[in-house]
Length: 304
Image 1: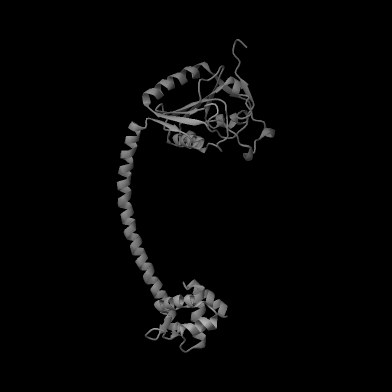
Image 2: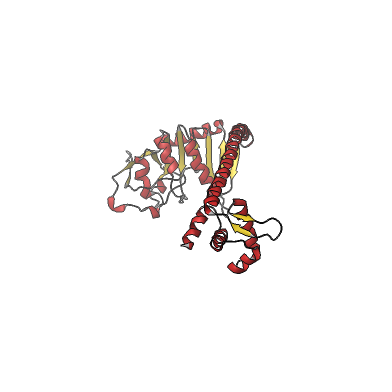
């Protein structure tokens, strides 16, 4: 029974030592010195002193005046309601403090939002060109730009391909009505890194074409305003260049449109059910793509 009482007292906010001492003094009755409590319960004296002071502050013990005074347990019918009242007062004070902090947070939020807008405007002027030195930063920025895209995302897609773990932002962009266009090199269509996934990319809304030649560069253009390009230097880690310049983006968009007009639409056959790719085998091109599988065939030209 005593063990259950100790557990219940701990639920009311007492520590294990405090609950043990209060129950012991309540059972033994009378008054006890701290040294006697420590010896009887085999608890370090320093721990006993801390627990006794805490119990006295909580209203569960009474102490004789002066140093070395004796302690006695306050009857439960007075001690426990007092304990709850103290907890309620502490909670009320805490709620008051939180309310004051909430007011401060609201005021600070407005001020920081204004500061953030000012800094963002400055960044556009001073950081028109940014170099992203970490491949993970390049992929993270690519996903974020897709989420921010309003009208178009145009991409030159070519090897090397690697797996960034899926591309949910593109799915969200397509659902919002963003037009996503991708040009692939003819030589890369049969690349095992991307071939199994064309079907879902295109059925989800991506427009794809195949260019019978070598694309000049990997590149993604967002809303004809922002350009993101990975840079591959032999012997060095991949980096990325982010350009926020509408004039340059417009020029590169003209180059994209020129190659788009020369490229052939990607025509898909039905997906083979026995060639489903499991999630643990996801691989995608950069920019990141969703999973899928399809048989591909190139639209024949009169010269074929």
